[in-house]
Length: 268
Image (cartoon, rainbow, N blue to C red; front, side):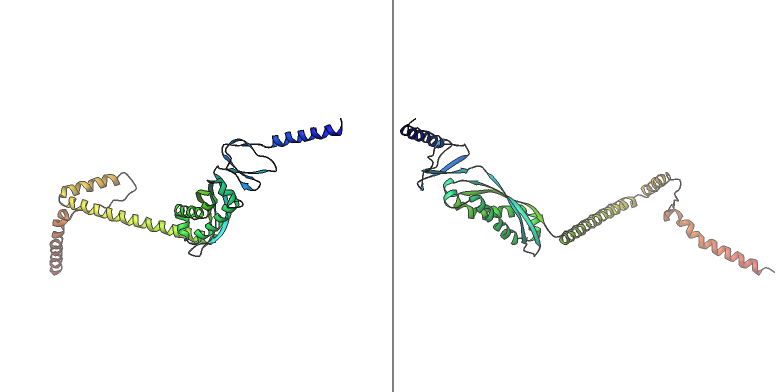
């Protein structure tokens, strides 16, 4: 084969390879931001697209929601408590052109912005808010991060604070506080129960006092309940209306016994 024939064959093969390399396939969730000789072209849609190597440059942009984990951040809360907080951020590209033109790497930029915003927002909240009201902090974080990433064509969907680590001394103090709070509630509940029981007993005593027969029946019922235990010692109170007459006769009987004793001593 002569050199004049080899050169056209080689050029033809290179042209075929170049054309084959020009075909690009974009997935349904992708968009293509292309530049021709450095100039921005319209965004390419999903499907087969023709991108000429050396002339065009295409940047694939994923439109799916991306999960971004924020590494643990050392923060100091509003009430001067040191803590380590990490979070997860879900964001999505809404404008492919701005995500390429406005920032070099929108994922890295969003991550850095989320870290700084997390430290700032947590630093404005106290420890109780951080532990008990995370939903409010999550909304505040999402709004703050969105305000920074919106010019980049990136929208933050969800921000969730995952873990909050506090010093062991603070954990023990919180445990003691929680235990004291539970004891306080238990004492209040016990006191309320005693108050209700005393009120019910007062009403029951008032009802029984209106009918002495009911009181006697109650005594008999109590004896029946105590008699079930053979080792029990029962002290049975008697009403004053029953033993009253006997008690009234005791002083008379004592006077009679004393008089009889004196008479005996006076006899020769």
